[in-house]
Image (cartoon, rainbow, N blue to C red; front, side, top):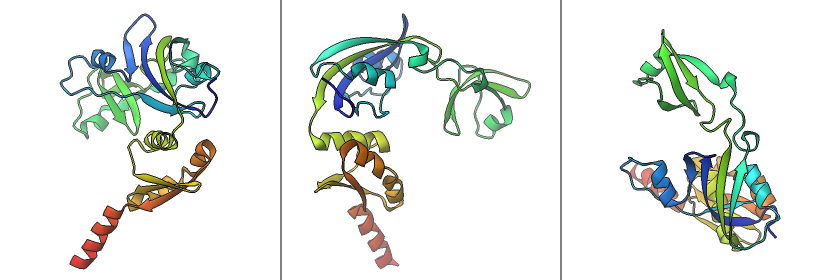
Length: 226
């Protein structure tokens, strides 16, 4: 049976109940979601650790205790167990000049990133723009179709998945004794060290950051040229 801290590989598609797709890692469903876009759609299975905040907690809770075998599950979720109820306080009025300073035209339906928050323009008039910062599917019942592909036992696959989740990209690494050494740019070394407890808790490995050899070479070359 699957347990907390097991790493698994899944394919999934999420829909508003009785409605449209809003998330997926399956190419065919992503093409439906991004219909009309001219960029190439890429997709790959998602590897994550159960019970560690890498996916919706309700999905984790559903899968923990299920057989460690290929299976497909339909998982209906209430708003409370998915993306929460809509919060009226997250509908805010913002001066239109803030948009114009960035050469943006805040027409209704426009979606933008405002100080790290995703907002959708509802209306614009009288020098004020009404923006909804609620998750687009908050307040809605959703259904996840989750295909369990396999449980991950290989340590390197687990490390790669955790690195990709935490740093949103692949990074070169190696394992040595009970430690994992990650190569990063010099300016990222302090940031990587913030996740030492996470690696220790999930993988029982000490985390170390090492400056990329290519970055060192470029730095040394710059010193020589100077």
